[in-house]
Amino acid sequence: MSAPGIPAWRPREPPPPINKHPAHDSASLLYEPPTGKGEPFLNHGFLDEVFGDWQFNEIFTLGSGLPFIFSDGVDVANTGTENERPSYSGATLAPTGGKSRFHWFNNTSYNQPGAAYVEPAQYTFGDFPATACMVPVSFRGTLR
View 1 (cartoon, rainbow, N blue to C red):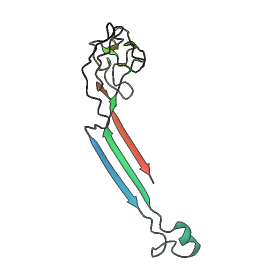
View 2: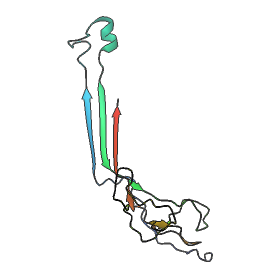
View 3: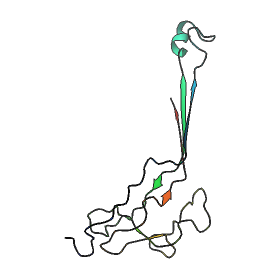
View 4: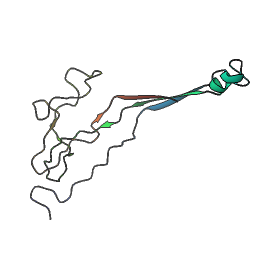
């Protein structure tokens, strides 16, 4: 038994793949300066103790983006949480002026004409797909 307007059973949508990268690549770099015992530079005394046996490691990771999950921040379905998804309005998800570095999805304000997502009807869940948008690219570098 469920409250009026709240479905007793909601079809389960698979969770967004938080680690899905259609393209992912890593590279690492290791450099040992020629300093210290047995090396041509700074190989004796105090300088050997301070500058000897150093190495530098760099790890680069480049991948396609992760899912960007929309949340309406309103408890429309009356579930006690404010992280429900909005409803899809049928408008295009692509930006009207074409994609750019700072404008890669239709970011027309919520519930405005032309917006891709709108507030669902009271006591219902939104139907906006959990993986409708992907963050463009991720790049990470670490120096150790």
